Length: 199
Image (cartoon, rainbow, N blue to C red; front, top):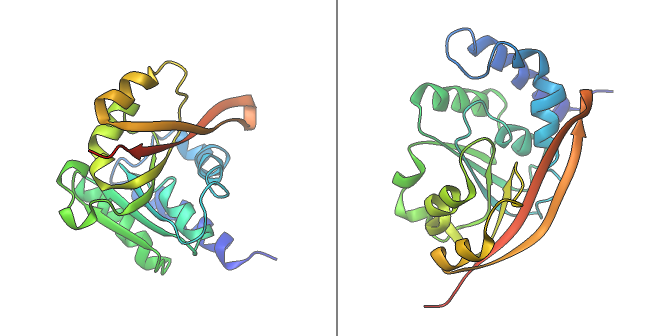
């Protein structure tokens, strides 16, 4: 029997196809892989986040991973920050359509996010947004003293010591999770914690 969460997921995927006719949410080629690639990518986050966490997803765009995360993890709060107005309207429409009380959309650039959100997030996620230096640069002010970052990339080519010095952080790699999507497509999900040093 299909549960309510699964119904909401397929309603969300259907909505992407509908809105993609008028705004560019996803490439026409990728429309054929909404479940097998984009959803399964998002699903990799589900068991990485503790209950009652407050998450900010930057550059949410087409709703991955924020909306599947909000659907399947009603015990956490998810906030999407999206700079493009049309995409933010799409995300807000999905929030209302699916009655996701644990999900909020903010239409702004991350660097212009209100000061009320400073030091308030325990998790920060980013999928196809930017490099790690830029992600930390733009979000560090909104992170709690100890914050967890989950990015869809590897840190193998990153000089961690330089990042720590630049942003006055202590970074610890919690897990680098390698997994494969259908068609043997390799993905890497990196979870690391960043603790702000006392000034």
